[in-house]
Length: 376
Image 1 (cartoon, rainbow, N blue to C red):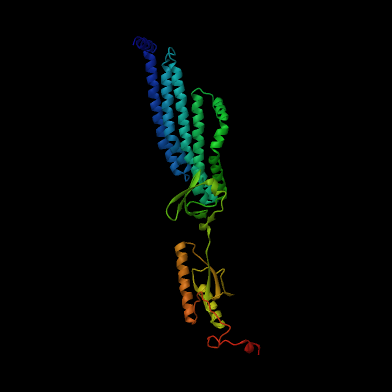
Image 2: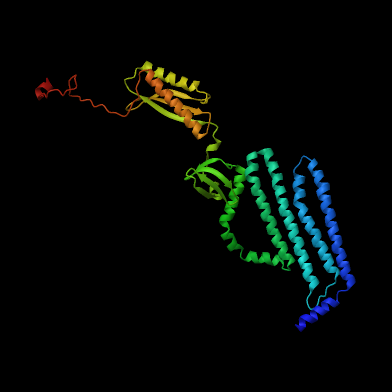
């Protein structure tokens, strides 16, 4: 208690009333300056930015308003404390507040840069949108995240430096364990490289229907390390990005039209004229359907199958949506059935006919003959 009392006495004696008054005056001036700056920003600059067409100046102003206000308070508080000329013995109080001031300014700068990263994201999205809207929607946020991570990492180093530690020694210490860190982060770096490749190649975007390996579904999100795919069974599969750069990916959403390939078999007793009439009717059905792509289609009697005469049908639907595609295919199949029925033909089904070589005209086995009859 005596030590604390003596320290308090020395502390209080070292501060004169004039210094306290001067420190109070600095605080009052700080509050006045802060109020003036706030009025200037909100009533002056804010009105100016609202008149411009660009949204970037609005985002910039919103990002710096709060940090500038807090920075003024921190500077004013530090000047007020320093004006008191606090004692440096037995404890170096001015040095303590100096370090605290540096740390505060560092945090404010980092906070400001972090808020400005959102502006950078919007700027990059605008740049990407001029080239490709899909790139802007999917990959500009990834770059924004990278900028934020970089700002936080640099901020940590600045804080370490302000605490009195040497950044060089810290980095050297990291270098000693660099091999272990590299081995541990190998997969992470591979995934980050995969993300970079995806940004450049753009194999798919959010919402696309993709298929690779045993994964089949819609892309929900594309992240730095992985991509999330919602399968048709409604389960969520998280795929490392490094796999996406080394696999063959089928992007069904990039189909411009959807293919139909089928073979229709009719019975062998069908006359050639009716076979060609059916072929012509089927082609006309495709020609008359507005949902069938007219640029390319094939309808040909092309094969003698073991149980049928086969007509090959090949065409594309204009819509790539699964439900609409099935609707068009169903309608055309029903028209094919009506055409076969109207021409008096029948669909073939797998069957076998057995002929006996030793039989009469009615298919009954012939009576056995002896060797002399066979030789005569």
